[in-house]
Length: 312
Image (cartoon, rainbow, N blue to C red; front, side, top):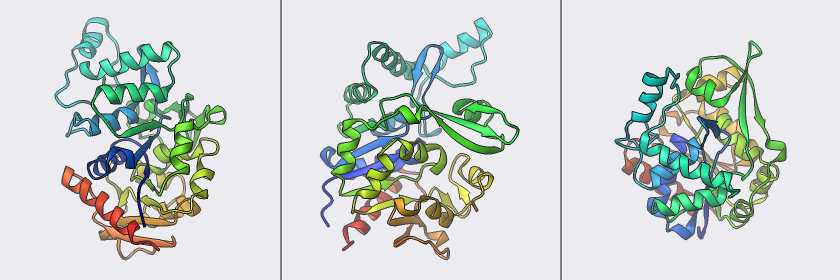
């Protein structure tokens, strides 16, 4: 099977790792990365796009290798001044160099430039040749509804509350008004394979699939549509995926992730240590899916590409 165009749906840290692995293997014209933007928000007057920036910084070779987000070697002089001089609660970390990205994005946003074009400009200036697309040009915001009835915007839940509140349900504010950009629509319609990265299924991937028409466009493609599990040995590699699965009624396991995606995928990749699990998808295989080094990221990406190349 020829794989001339791979589309990857990704969220933040975990998804960005696979995106980097794919980008190190595939030429720019053969890869499109579609990124969750439901984490985007306004902070101190700046438009912040955490997942988009994490993907960009990874592909540009600028990512902080310890945190998996932000810029390597960045400082927080501005943030420290806000806290020390003005008494602000600086709960969301913005690095000084990182802020340059947000300043440009915000300036262009207020000039009426689409988010797709903003990402293209930022990527180009960072020397990124692969195509990175926001899931939509419209503002969408994940709202976390807790069992106590409280509604938290995503970053308040994720950063301020450190994802400790028990979640009842999730809402994607603004999703009904969102549309696929022409670039996203064309990417999916011309994909030879669609990969769902090992990002949080509910917080990162679900908003992408909730963009009107996008889920159906993915399902309509008679090509390998493969999800990679973010759960290894019943635990999330990072973040609240396992905790959230349990709160929403799923057993934290790779097989439950496959069940959640259902007919959206026709293939599933999960970690070799979970090989004894039964996965209910037409095709499934196991690899070492834990990605720490760049070599790990490339190895997983290559294994997945080799596997789907052999599909009939």
